[in-house]
Image 1 (tube, rainbow, N blue to C red):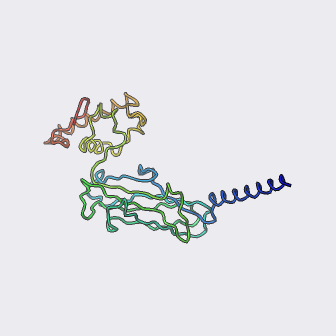
Image 2 (image 1 turned 30 degrees about the vertical axis):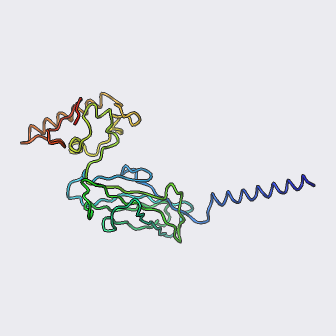
Image 3 (image 1 turned 180 degrees about the horizontal axis):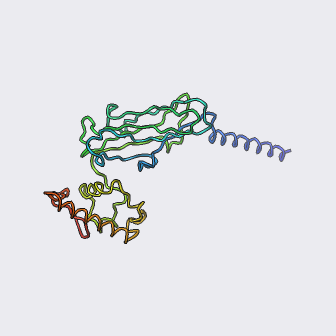
Length: 251
């Protein structure tokens, strides 16, 4: 009899555990979570954008927020809600615009454009960064998704930010990062990525291919010499001295 009781008790406990586990794993209601657009070099929880890469005519820019849905798709469009967090936001609602918060019918995700402005009231973005932090908020259509994917931060400025690939392997042969040295590269090559081009190893920060890297540096030096020969004034570095590109530089 005691054995029979233990078997029944064990079965009940297993059933309760299974029900609780199912409750924590599945939900009758769909949920949403958010992330960055890899095409804009965003990470899972943030993006950093610089207007300095564009001419003065560009006064606003759309940064994409990817909004994903769990559960089955719906045959109707469904709205979702984001709230702006004061902690992590230093701009007003006049300095950005959120796009339509809607998941289209039959879709598992939506791309939400967040338009940020180059001119922010009360801030000098040539020296400061603007930030906007949003969080998923439950509504009648969606529950909040995983906590680690519930918050996203937009950061923007109007000065050049040192790219991830500008590490020791590049500094040693081109010089340390300065606004002018990076701007010169952008002027001639655009938003180049030396990781993708196989010149800098993303793990070590050192040269990944000496032949490619030194050929690139030689091109930069030739372009700089050509610029200086065809202009009345040389290309200037941040400190007011003529820009140099090469080894052994400290500025």
